[in-house]
Length: 199
Image (cartoon, rainbow, N blue to C red; front, side, top):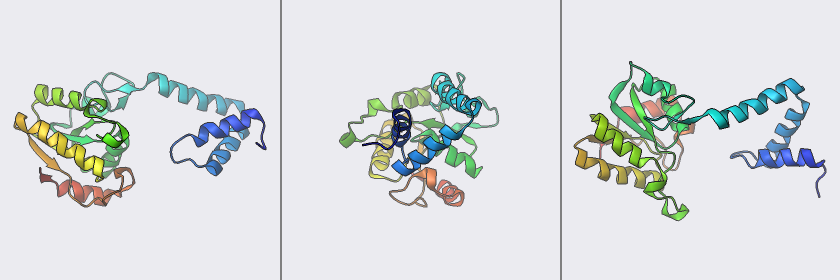
């Protein structure tokens, strides 16, 4: 039995369904939203709807963007011959915060996980292979998370890419095994990038 009216209960349930949000955090968020003035609440709702409607994949790297090409791919200052392959946009953001990397990215939006039913066709591998064929990069840096799935995905990609004659490297083990790049500090990420090795 809920202590709250239906609209409050529904709002709490929607917040609780978000990743990393427990029931107590969901309640705090719901009551915070209820306490907002109507203008702020509408701005929050509009921001959510706008992001859902306007954000799409970059036609080059598959990062999230509101245009055809993301700002990183559009930048003339980035080294287009160096492509770092990451699992998701959060990992890309983690590397950007280091300010140590000047190449471009390719976002897979997941990893191969047979147990979860995720196959190579479910992530952005075809787009990566087309990009390698079209752009002829000098190096592919595999920066998937050091989990079983991340390692398996990196090995799978390295086997796919080898026939293209491109140098393939893997980030070094400065990143803790079983951890997510999103939560690793910038110094560790920078050292992992510097210590990458050929696969």
